Length: 458
Figure 1 (cartoon, rainbow, N blue to C red):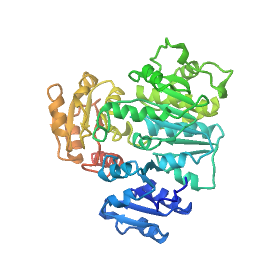
Figure 2 (cartoon, helix red, strand yellow):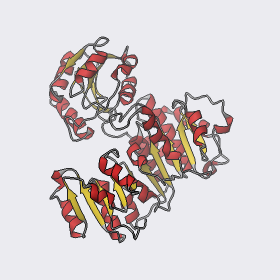
Figure 3 (cartoon, rainbow, N blue to C red):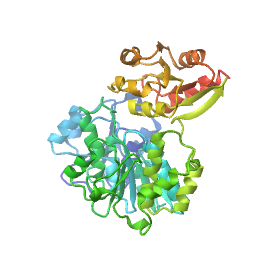
Figure 4 (cartoon, rainbow, N blue to C red):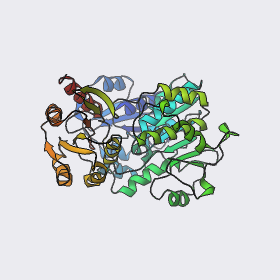
């Protein structure tokens, strides 16, 4: 990425992990870099001091419209909305808006496997990485999970395959991104506090395929609403493979296109069927995790994994923390932590993983969710709902007419109430259907609080 001679600098917006990494990378590439962050707490931190020692100017606690307008390129961190007046003013002045992910991806020569979707991204990203590693390949796993891609670009330690989780926010500024293998796991309501409507969110997710060519592979959940029309309207050029066992294709032109790494092996559908016939291979719970496994198998085969490597990874993979994670059994009551369930679809899938007698802890920061859609998922499974956080009244209004619902003051109170109401054989499940930021720094802090409160009961 070259800087125009007619402009003075590149501005990096947001000093999170990816922002700091891309600022240092661009400086090392000879760019004149300015960093800015609206948070005044970033004023004097080890990160800002390090950047300033490298000759990178910082503007902390405010955003200057003049700084944005006079830049050559604005590199924005994924957590920052693009509708602010400083961004709009920069765009009107012809300033290009890009993301760290986009800049990094175009500098990577190795094959990229990219995973997006509303739910399941981190599980699938991690599992694909394990399948490829168990197949003897050297793998980098990063992106929206863990290490930013720009750090891989900066490193001299190169992999055979790059596996990257990609959020919708990253896709919004990934104008040139062309992954060799791209997976769309699912699209359900989420981040509606960030996007003007659901269609805009859908557009963002589908854009993962926009730059693919006939040598690339698109792996798509067959049950995504209106998928066939979307594929036709986008004019996707990539080789398209569907996953999800419930799908019965009548569209032969899109059904299991040939993929060179596995030819002349059996159809991809029969390969995944083989694994599901051996349920002991996987310890992951729930139908959604069967879909995650199927997508992982298909992508790994496209990227050159062996059947032996895939099987070894499935046998050893125990799932990730805060995703229907078993915590303890106390007086024959099971406790599960699904703090990563930050939207209604994730919570519905978590509830679906259990047969009945669930006491469900919900609530947190609302993302403009319609909680009434959960009624059908909960019926026959959820016996009581304990509500916490900013959204508890909204959830109560949507569901209290159908399920016993009680307010709790905090996680400690919620766990105690749940246990008081539980009988032997019940399951107490934390699956909030909300973000965590009203009470916690992130979903993992919320999950660990739940675990700690459960341990107090022992």
